[in-house]
Length: 126
Image (cartoon, rainbow, N blue to C red; front, side, top):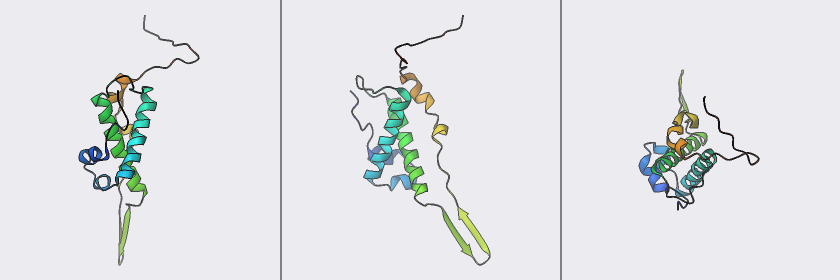
């Protein structure tokens, strides 16, 4: 049985190469992990209660937690701007798009279809 949380803040720090994520507190990383787990649960409609957590799902949670941590750090104000005499520069870090993480390959095998109004319709080519 897969008990939550599926990953620990230390595992996220070890996985990440992003300094902002590595420096986040355990409390903040726990929130990032909870958000990542909820994304996986919502996407797959699978609670993983009756089975051991697959490695692909754990990997997806690690990747998502890192992305959520990175995006939160950016929103908190990592964008810097300085002016020297007549010269101005701005360093900018972009947010990680969750859609661009390619989690479909990791999670599609674990998606459970839920019937709507008690009916499941499956179609196939003739």
